[in-house]
Amino acid sequence: MLSLKDAGTFHGHLGPYLTIGYMAGVFASEKLEQKTEFDLEAWVMVPGKTPYTCIVDGVQCSSKCTLGKGNIHVIDSPKFEIKFKNKKTGKEIRLRIKREVLETIDEYGEDMEGAVKWIRSKALQEIFEIVE
Image (cartoon, rainbow, N blue to C red; front, side, top):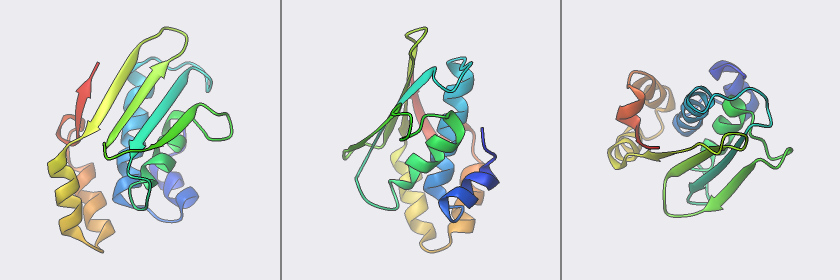
């Protein structure tokens, strides 16, 4: 797994949606007991435009689900949800980004550094509704 700093380098900058995707991938990797880069499959359901699709890069950098391996699926959707499945065990988890998180990010406007700092100060359960 890349570090969050490395994910920012890969993506081009460290932004709030990249950070959210990164956090989701780290959690899923641990919770679903990922052993290899082929264990997990991810579905990222967000509106199909930036900045929301930046979540995809965060998920790729932290979960090893990548477009190149075909184990990540990007779905243009009004939802803000990331689903992970361990293909070996069948276990799944869904992480729904809370509406108030999206609203707070919007309030930060162009201050991406401030938004990232705010996100990183929160517990995972404050960012996501977690459905197992």
